[in-house]
Length: 57
Picture 1 (cartoon, rainbow, N blue to C red):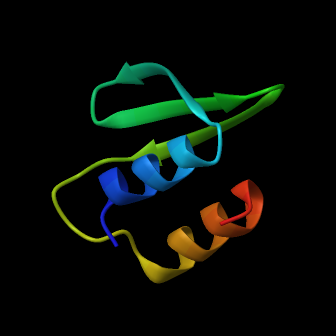
Picture 2 (cartoon, rainbow, N blue to C red):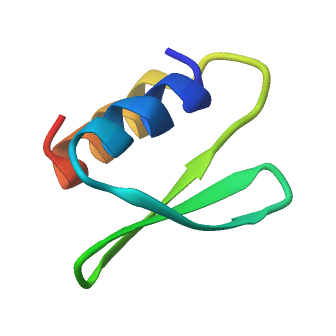
Picture 3 (cartoon, rainbow, N blue to C red):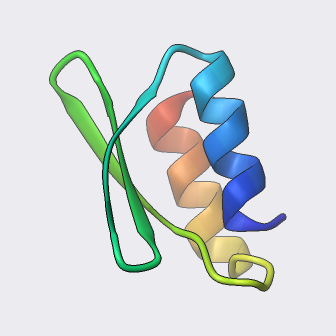
């Protein structure tokens, strides 16, 4: 799964893009912050699973 797909799924859950620094999207929801790397390739499985756990996907 690519980083941009994760960003779109998070936006459906109420996360908003706080800022973009280079190729990293900083997403916020309440007092939580999550950084999503948006490169033109799939995220490594371990990173993807840990992001999913933290944000509730």
